[in-house]
Image 1 (cartoon, one colour):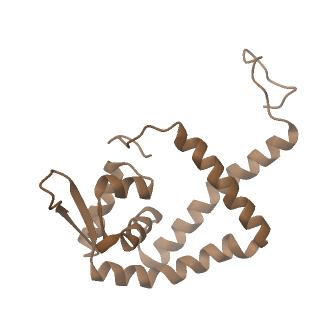
Image 2 (cartoon, rainbow, N blue to C red):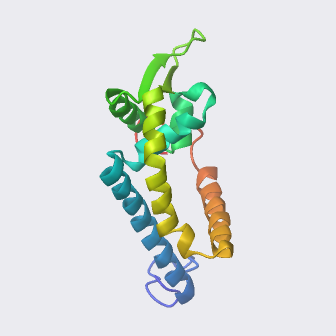
Image 3 (cartoon, one colour):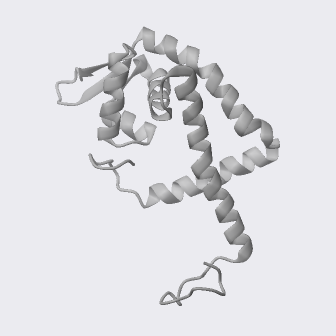
Length: 172
């Protein structure tokens, strides 16, 4: 809604200007189309979805390629429930193993197997090519830096209002 239309009962709302509406619409188009395009490439070329790819990538960067599931869920931006389903699929493929932590607690961790690391190494070049094609190579270095800065600012605002831990229902 614009500043001059549709105020209804929200007269205390600072409506978006025409320019802000255009920028918001462009952002929403990006948010709706880019993840779907990246997901389609990963599914087509590697048989995994974006979330599974990010789970594999996060595990590959962890010490001993292992993370406690709650930490992995946070890093992969998903709920424990969503992560559990993804890890089950990745376990079936032989790319991840799940085990109880050795610290005597009840926590469960996931470890990237050698086969999983090899799969990630095989997937990554195609994914990076798609990221370059859709984002990096269509922007100037200054535009990419500004986009990264803006994305971090928005993500920080979103995370500031988020609960500290992801619950079983819904994604983080």
